[in-house]
Image (cartoon, rainbow over the protein chains, first blue to last red):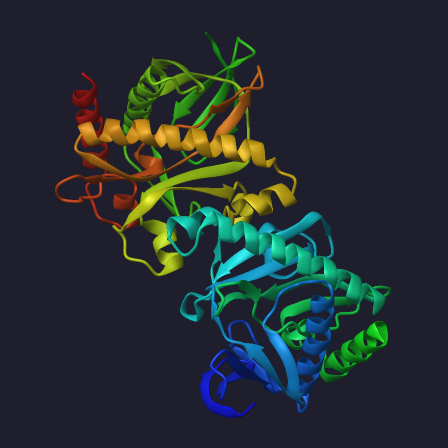
Length: 238
Length: 238
């Protein structure tokens, strides 16, 4: 497979076309951003770490029958993925109250939810990705309720696999954000990285934050935490 | 029916107990507030006008089989209503894009929605009544999906009656906000005023705003518009 043109550059990834029409190359960058890119940082090797963590996760999801865009990890910070047309919704799954939801509802971080919660945010940087309801999405004609129901079901299935995987690594999956897209066969598949950049992971015993909140909240040891997540996951799956 | 103790005072209403356990007296105030009461105003007779407009609307809803808390209008700015336990959700129905939704989604005010949209906002002044999805509401245990489905169905039914009623008065119903509660028989009924304070009404021909947006946006003629809404509705129903 040959890397060809850069076709998209996001906050933490670059996407290249390849010599195969249905296949893209995803390059993980070392940059870190938060608060809709108002806060910026980076550390050397972050891209590679996130690519490795995503690889472990994609492999585990595959083993559990979850359809996703990952094909293979081609080098340190690069993976080959299926080309998809992204559904413009950020899909968030929450198991424990934290972040924007805790703030919005005036709740304490750490409260375990009665049931996992799926939320949709409309992907638009200019609008700061607003939170939207199913009814708003269908009234705006962005997609239909059947698709939303499918996204929720898949998101909860992924959540279940991830919760078990992280628990073996001594980590609580607090929440995560992902995206879905339609591949060339029009199948809806998971089409985003899954890494500590887009999830909250707390140590099971100490509740120590092991994810991008360390960067967001200036807690230090960002690099060390990402590395530890990778090492713990690697042990967990080996 | 005798007015007894003041049991609640809101931004635009006072609620009194009466000598009948299941019955309350609702007094409409002359005050006007906007932006979660950051902006304050009033005009003499506003309470009475809103009480009269609400009365016309409640009568029309009753004629159309909508169950609500209104019993009778006892004097100029006072009505007798059934006592209910309020479900802590503001229920908003939108037919045309305007206000906070237009801002949130970066859309132009005036765009007609593909279908009427029902939204829920969690009633909490300290949190500025945040917008919440069905899944957030059920995950927080505030109520169940069956109740939300019932609220939506009722809200759309009310919307349909109001749209027809206002159209006869030469007014487009852009959107409205209301609340529901459970009465002593545990029936879920409409339990809020319906007046230009909590809806957007535009003249069918000129799109002139005839509601609280005149106050919110300093457009002037607030009093004249409320009066015109009342007079047009009165003609429409007579």
